[in-house]
Length: 83
Image: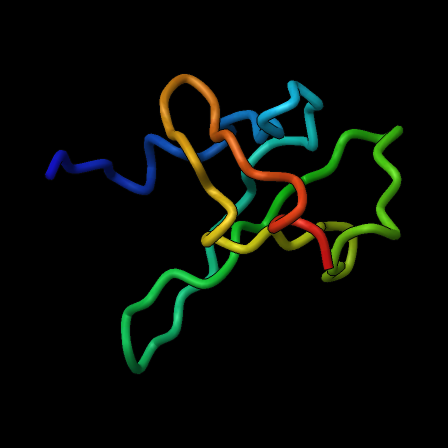
C-alpha cells in the first residue's frame, strides 16, 4: 500500500473516466467516529451542470467510492459520482 498525504491532493483536478472535468478538489469529508473517507468536496467548473450532483453551498460532493484512480488527477466513475 502506498501512502498519499492529504495536502498533496488539494487542488487536484477531478475528472470523469470519460474525460469530463468536474472541478478541483477543495476538501475531503470523513466520518470522525470511524475515520472512513466519505466525500470529496469539489469546487466545480463554472459550466458544470450542478443539478446532477449533491451540493453543499458553492461546492459539489462526490462520493469517495466513485474514485477509480489517483495520479496527476483524481479519476471518478461519473455514474457513482452523481446523486
